[in-house]
Length: 639
Image 1 (cartoon, rainbow, N blue to C red):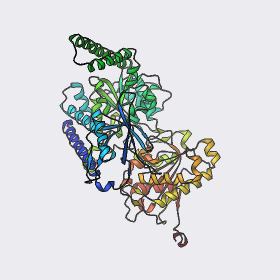
Image 2 (image 1 turned 90 degrees about the horizontal axis):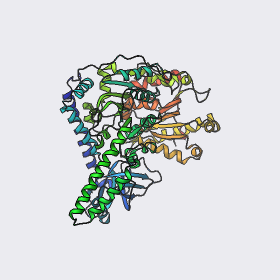
Image 3 (image 1 turned 45 degrees about the vertical axis):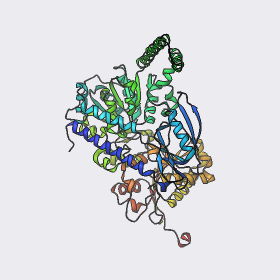
Image 4 (image 1 turned 180 degrees about the vertical axis):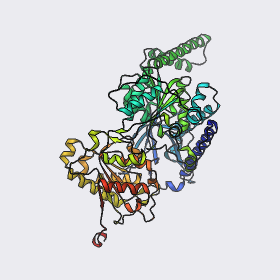
């Protein structure tokens, strides 16, 4: 049973977070193994060898350097993304030693065979070039130590705080206090359904906490935006956060399109093009006083270069510095006063320009994917909090198994849902899926409470089609394989999937697909299988004209998306019934619920049906769709 006292719970979070950090540091140290770099290395997190190219400056006057490397025809998925920290390492050609260079860099741009990274100091650039002259260099994604520091500091502050309002909120979220609600006149939103209206009503009435629980396709974002707009009728300014930059940008874009002034805080390198215009940096540079500030800063740099300085020069410099500070404060104050919504990632809420700011209400979108320690960083700035998300979909990523088992994978939203159910409003009308695609996840994850909106309930790609198909490979003898990165693939299943997809497209008709813009998503839980399927698609002429209609990605890559047709490659095929990664049923919930009109699953039913979830899914498909068992190959086919 969960401990009621908040302090021991937060102290336990500190222990688990330190375990996760130590695990990541140890894994990074092990990754720098000499055996790994015998030749060219292309992995999602690493490129070796690399060449250091030209130096330039970006729009923010930061030094950047170009990094180039060779690429295969089938370049692997990459975890190199703008804004991510990276580190260089050197491989000596004399004693086979590997050394991580001391500085941390950040990715500016990503291209085929090229990265642009920002350089922290001129000394870092000199060190990098010196190493490149005498040794072979590689680049690898680095541990985000800043995020760990922010989360640990937030937990420490949450433990120590004696602020009466925060302590009350903390004890309501994870302690014995029960949430309170005001009694307000019933609001009316004719464009929302009943549960969406109830969710907005609960958000407005909540004094400490409210939760919008939005299963797939139920209009969670629409409801959250309406709740934010309605809150702004009563409050001057709110903070909106999410665990990732992509999620922050998505919700911020929806709010901005409603005519609300949004100020986006964070690294501009990690913002969408639309939100870049709302960024603090862009707004700062566009302020009427910025031209004078820029001139003063230039004069200060020039005067600093002139040494030694006279008393007159020092006095002038002091006046310039005072005026610069005055302008900086004025610009920053104007930007914050004009904004109704301040948006940032949970980690970004610790950004220095937000240090002394508080908000009546904090909205956390995609809260079911957020680590609890990251949530506390933002909650420290708020009087009340609204969570929005679905804890039956993708969880936060935890690398340390012991930390996950210890509870780090349980989010703050999950805890509040369990202990304070009065806070929760479940959205129950979904606008995405055919009723038969929806029915199984509804029963398994949402107590059968979801219902399909009338206009999608019976929608099919073709009137002769069924919404569900399982293609069973139990008799085919395919077999799975594991690569050195511990990802799994099943080449025969991938080839079969491509064949089935072509047959399905030909049945529907190329003209119909192109005219009606029917789109397809191919999903596999395993990255190696995704790479294999992408390569097979690329090789076949038939699919070249359809490349804009077909997406291939992992489950995580499809989070928040939907397609008319979803095809899932299950990969696992063994006599032991071992399914590994597929035990994470929340990921399978995401995969299944991406489909609007047609769901095709390709997999070994015998291997998978030993798990109750998959056994019942197969029964559901047999009752509401097509279950096709492929025959064993003939001796001629095997030879």
